[in-house]
Image 1 (cartoon, rainbow, N blue to C red):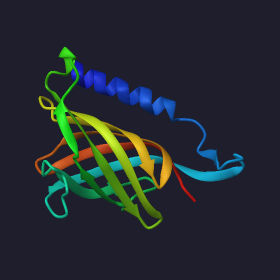
Image 2: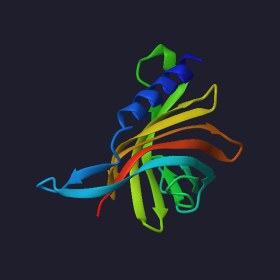
Image 3: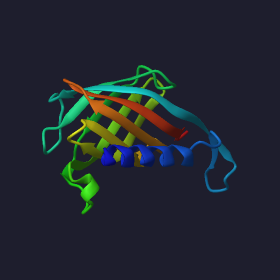
Image 4: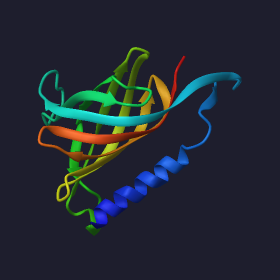
Length: 161
């Protein structure tokens, strides 16, 4: 319960930080305006071995449902996994990271994520560390299903022109 509360508070803080303007200056002189969109929707994925390059054999594939990236394909690869930092409230959690690649008709966005999986509650949360193909911030919070994960996807993404 404490871990779930911690993860929920982290999500709220992260989302409030990125609730502002949906365009941003880009370029050396700061005059070019980059189109930005609020990233919203569900990310529904299933475990897969097809094309999985994870050293742990942990990959998911699926799609985004709703929001500006509706219909985009999604592929996540776990590149690192381990115990959480020395925090007793997270004793039942595993830390993970890896790239989440979203492919839409408008282009491809690779989100380097880091997150926690709460083993007791089958709850997962992750947030972006860096983006390729754009800038911004992406957060997911979801639950494990019998076949993968069902997550809420939120944030702001500014695509690189």
